[in-house]
Length: 173
Image 1 (cartoon, helix red, strand yellow):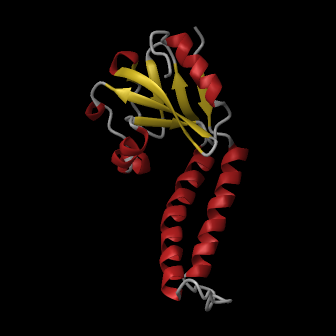
Image 2: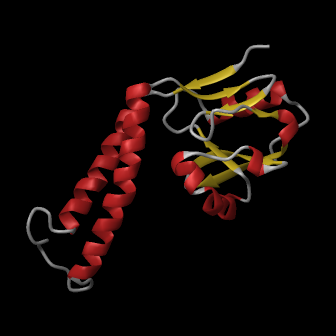
């Protein structure tokens, strides 16, 4: 059976990076890096804009770094095969089908993610930003590993079909 492989899409990643850089620029504007913010808002204080600016710089700056790294390195983002699921942003390990108890779908504002529910999440710890945000992600999605195909050359529906082909007993519900 043919394995499903999703590669990083340079065009999609470049567009996402452009958006992140735009938010970094807005953050710099809000913290006053180019001089005082004008026109001043009557509704919000300059301190509010500074806080929003620093949050924007921190979050979107980190996103821009991760996206730029993926853009430069390229390569494989997701592999679904007979042995299990390998999600490069999460770990170097392939998560075997026997360790996945359930697979669900999570939707937010038109974005769809595949959510893996693991028998023992401690056996497959996340790394980087996804590992750092794992507890918040669990609280938000109810699962252990959230797989997004944003920035890849494949679609959510193709990945779901690959899961159904390779492990029919795990239906996405």
